[in-house]
Image (cartoon, rainbow, N blue to C red):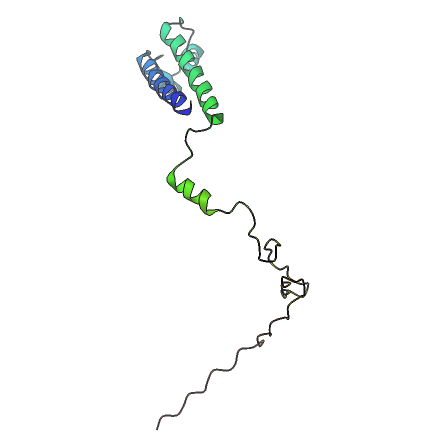
Length: 146
């Protein structure tokens, strides 16, 4: 359905281009605004007879607008490109389960800014890991050469 409407839209766009190019110009156009001193009819384009080309332009424009809006809401055929399929296959849809049965969660930081240890599968909290020193050890002093 999507591709059928897309082909119709392309054909309509080509037809609209041809119909617009076949129409005669109104004469003057923007050139009359540059100090030509024309009347309001030449600036605004006086009243012309409605021709078959004018009607065709309006119809093609309306069809183009309607098809564009319809295509926005019609889902594409197929399941997407190979890259999209690989991305969908690689993305887990549910949280990963731990061996203990609870879903994996990142430990929340404590108010002091340190992470709390995650509970073990039996529910008992783990020991906190040893804290790293606040300052790094001084670099070794250079050895004098002899």
